[in-house]
Image (cartoon, rainbow, N blue to C red):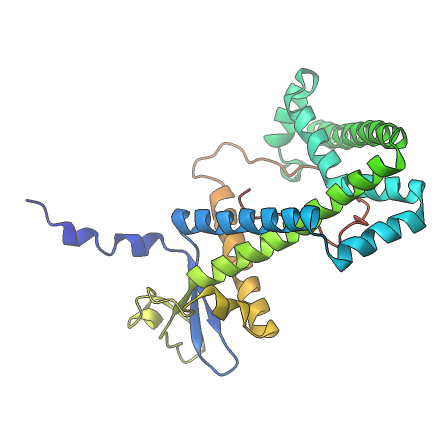
Length: 289
């Protein structure tokens, strides 16, 4: 019979996380969620988005009523501009995805993804080629965005006042619903990921592997999501920022070049500046969706 006990510490080798030192010197371990916890966070986010949308459509709110009043005051042209501006990120994503699968762009896209102009000298003709492809790519993205915006504007201008109001309301509900979804995701992330930590830093104030000798990082700090909901703003923001940095570091690790790689993907050209959505201060999305 084999000895299964030798695998008991194996999960610890794959755990990603970081210490958060609080103002009073207490240390909290913030652990990246496992796939099952991530799925729970996504479900909580989806429910929060659906709950908000249904509440606005069936019951409404003072904020929702005020939205309708402001649309009437601003007029049709401003309302159409707001809807188009709010979908700026969608236009950009659609354009880049279309170019990705466009046969006429296949060769140039592959060159962009598998080349790095930084490895070439200033007078190298291949560097000039890459720069030209990047310039052409950005121009094509912008051209397609303009086409989609013009098409949407034509569709909106043909709508009645009532239809336009409905379209604006749907856009607002969607954007606001994303905000509530993100909040629900973060709350679940903090609930699952914040763990009790007894780490002791070294004389220089740094945490190493030995600093966690007495930790198991299995006990959650918060007993319920209500505990997370009642956190002071400063602490909540500190937890959120640390979890964001953990997620970023994991993505960087996944996207880092593999050993013996013959080439590295170049970065895509910078996105042209997009208008800020008027129907919502930010277009937030839930991680992993």
